[in-house]
Each structure stands twice: as structure tokens, then as C-alpha cells.
Image (cartoon, rainbow, N blue to C red; front, top):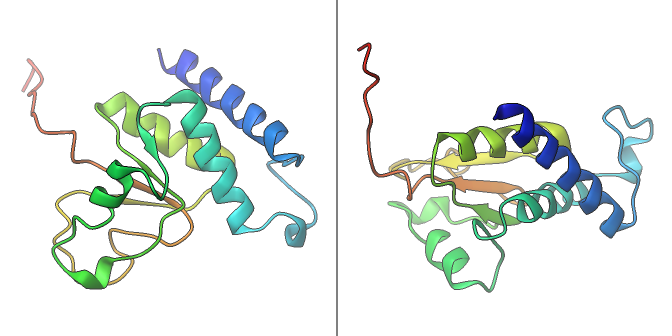
Amino acid sequence: MLGNMKSLIVLGYAAAAALAGVTPAVHYEREADIGPRTLSFLGCAALKLVHPAKVFYPGDAVYEAENKAFWSNTQLMNPKCIFRPVNAEDVSAGILNSRLTQTKFAVRGGAHTAIKGFNSIDDGVLMVLSNLTTLAVSSDR
């Protein structure tokens, strides 16, 4: 299953790059040509292609609600997009996507941190775990 997920993410990454009109490479030689904002755009676009119902942008109701769901207002930042996984495989795919697209990301669990940037991000992917509400203990534990 992870092989298929990785293939989908790589395909999404390539499609997002084509749509953006850039030719990113894992070891890009001219860092000035492709900066963090471009990478976060590519990361969000690739996630949206692979997980269309789980990625939200500014102006979407889910984005606005999730981006304000913090215990402390010091965490209010401006992520490029919000990714809301529904299971462990989605979390893994989100992290893999960030790695492949070199996109910065932050993870928000309970949002009980008052230190800016610990569970939010500017111009990156904010992965919110609000849909992960159940616990399943492995049968061997």
C-alpha cells in the first residue's frame, strides 16, 4: 500500500510542478529560483491532487475554522494550506509529500502550546490531527 501511496504522491508532485510551470528537482542547483513560497505552493498542490477532500486553502470554511482552533492566539499564523488527514496512512503520505516537495510543515495535535511556530506555520503545510479521534491498540500489545 505504501508503494502505491508513494507513486500517487510523486505523480501529484509532478503534476503540480507542471501546473506551476516550474521544473523542480530534488537537488536544485539554483536555490534562488525556487524558494520556500514556491515549494509550499507545490507541496499544497501535490497534496490537493492526491487528497482533494483533505486539503484546504485560505477562504475555505474548514481552513478558517482550523486555523483559529488554537488554545493561544500566539499560534495564529498563515499556513499556505491545511491538510486534515483521517488515518495514519494519510499522516504518512503528508509527511512523505513534504519530504518529496521539500515543503515545510507543522503538525497540530491538541494545540495547547503558547510558543509561536510550535504547532503552526507561515507559508507551509499545517497538518491538523482533529479527525484522528479514535485509538486502536494492536492485538499484540
